[in-house]
Length: 164
Image (tube, rainbow, N blue to C red):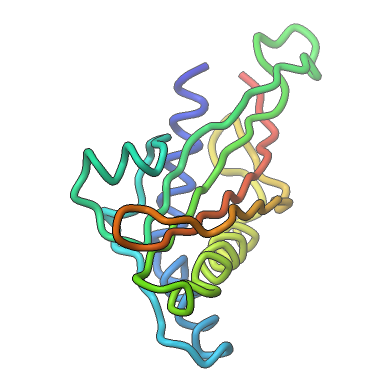
């Protein structure tokens, strides 16, 4: 089972980083909202599940950040005689940070929108064992103090239909 989830997470990362992906969506959203465009460097799109305080203390990462991880797996045994047949839930957690709340305002929402838009355009088969139907759910956390700055995060969860 780990290969199924790791392959899906790597595919998710590749889709976000490809041309027409996350940074292009962020640029279009910034133009629409008439704000300064953000970009997310490839090294800041990570396949890890880190708490915000742990990642800030143990890495040299620059905001904005995107963490990709598997949040849960449900083996529903939907296909008879399969070892696994069910759902794999992947999460893209976006984090934005700024010196003031005014500067932070809207950044996490625009990041979450860009991730959702990018993934939604890739409905269908992702790997030999998993497919994405295009649905996603976004949850926002309240802005909080993080070190000397303010930080806000949002989690975009998608559901893959999988079998192995």
